[in-house]
Image (cartoon, rainbow, N blue to C red; front, top):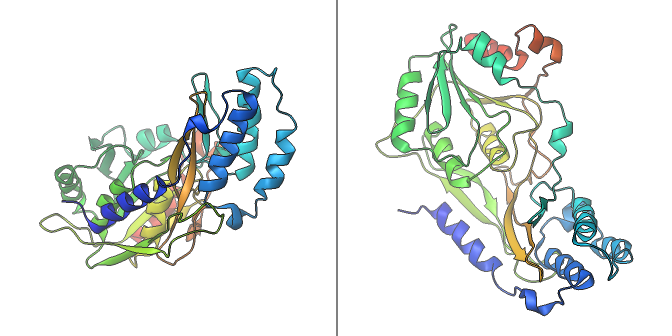
Length: 335
């Protein structure tokens, strides 16, 4: 049965479908495709004011470079450069030959080396279920790495994971390098760490074509699961700049729980639900259209700061050390 959170997501998706132009409203030539793209973003993108982007100025600066003789590759590169002005990893132009992107975290410190964790902390001895790698460390601290919120989390699988980790003195949830996925998987995982109805954040949707035309926020809540294992011991969440989109949302909610501490680097950000439009030539544009706040009512488009900043250097990795994981173990064993 769908929860209220699922119904809110469905309502926002349906609301975003209103007022869309068809590809036939624009000519299928460089100028028409450029204008179709700019207008799709103009009507549906949700962070113009938050990021102080003058989208008309951006249009005028790029429009003068469009000409009838340009190739699809030249047009794609120009349009991709225009979209990067939004500084948003959720904004992509999708063509048969390429996908434009703004993945700034690729140029930020990684602070994670899977091989180091597997060899020096897990001794290559771990279990896997629903995309979760898990084990009990020699310090009697539970460890689970979830690398992709696109991988469905089965409730039964999660029961087995948490039951296995229940004898540990605390738990580390490692979401470093998790680029996001489905918000419903965020809900499934977070609900195992709450014991009462908990505010998870709010969502708004566009109500018109204006840059400030938004609905009042819908608060959404998570509920502790019935007849499933919950975990109530101390928890450390490990995050890095590669913790993006749905993972960013997960970290923001977990950080609000009293038994949770976030260690590592600021997450990669990304807090807008996506909208997809089509251009006359068949290319698609994906963009942020519905902003999601954290439980504190703040947007996390630029990321969620950790409670404790810890970095990992190449020298650490070469020596088989993970300072973020070491810090988490130290915090949990000192409780």
